[in-house]
Length: 182
Figure (cartoon, rainbow, N blue to C red):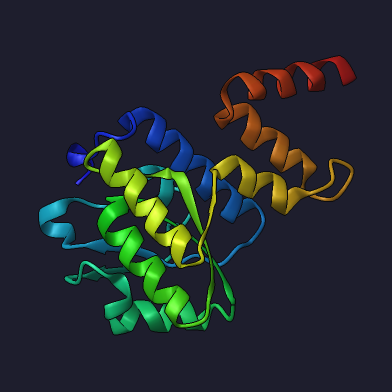
């Protein structure tokens, strides 16, 4: 399915998804992984599964993951009321699931730079639609810094490493600062 994404370059999308996966892994954030027709459309990125090798993946046929009972049960089992969502085809899988989660009463954050659409217009209009419905758009880096919140708190080393590996120029700045501190 990634071959149909044109709103973001594949390597950038994979980098952003890797950053998001590293955050969930480092901060023990529950995840629900899902594919749609894996046999025909392809598996999840290694950048995700490398961090969650033992996590079950809900393979569904529905475009809206919320219409898959196993997916909804997995989300409910996390016990969370706030969902951070990302995925391929912003205008389909991400949008439909986010709208359904909002309708079900969840607080939804859509990670705009860890999603991709068939066109820029598809991606942007899907984001507008979920925002209008009450979702909050964020980037993967915003998720990291909101979870970390304080550079003196536990987890700062993980946040620094994720930034170094995935935050481009800012990561280089963090790495340089770490170097200066010895």
